[in-house]
Length: 384
Image (cartoon, rainbow, N blue to C red):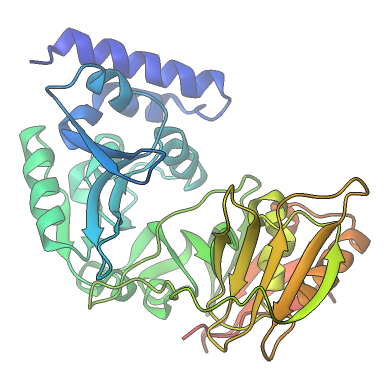
């Protein structure tokens, strides 16, 4: 059995690690991190081995408590697909990322906060410690997760409002909110969130157009629009699932390495090596681009769009730094990626903090460089 002394020691060490990383600066959030026991919310978690098999760790396993209080995300629920594969359904976010988001949210005493994605309930616990449970509201699509989170929070003396429902709809009955924070990613910011945050209030959300294609953006409601900048450091969350329980992820489509047009590139094909141009490339690519690997090793990075477009880029470069490209279908995916990289280079290789987003009341999403009135703007087309 975990003693009070044990977990407090681990919690203080975790807080110290996040402080040393330069992420945790607010004493109020440090106090919350040291006071709210993460292990109560994560009695078990799963880790995927190199062979793809998921292995569960519980309170009975050595090292469980140490891992729970490490600065790492933990997969807490799995779903089984039709082909038998198991994929993450819910997780406990990396504490350092939780704190980074909570500090960016800039909450103050008396603020009412809506959280989209209750998950384990740990983040709601941190918010309840900081603001008082009466000021915390949270929505989660999985009713079972809501029940567990409510029970765990109540055991610690916290009774925030937890509701099982579609996160895209928010929680209109308790609106307006001073802050909205989403612990899942969306392809477009739901209009309900803009309607439910007060004028001058903030919405912090991970806008993702595909794998690694997007980032956290902090939006302020200004009249009839939401507007703000992307956070400087990249982060990613699981896609928000809709009312049917499915995410917006696209299925992987066919890649025929024996066909298609061939060329070469000097770019590394892995999206996370240059996430800003990869995000901007989505604005010109087919909808729902899926990233994957092919071959032993693997040998190829692959991209497929729902229109049948595809490309494969060799992961290994030759002595001159060139990688082979093969692509086919109605859209030349890699040609678009190359052209966006060239544009990004001309703009001085801007980081995320130079990009901003405006969400208009008619649903239009505009990405801009440096300033909302910049001449360099892109419109996000709907994905669905």
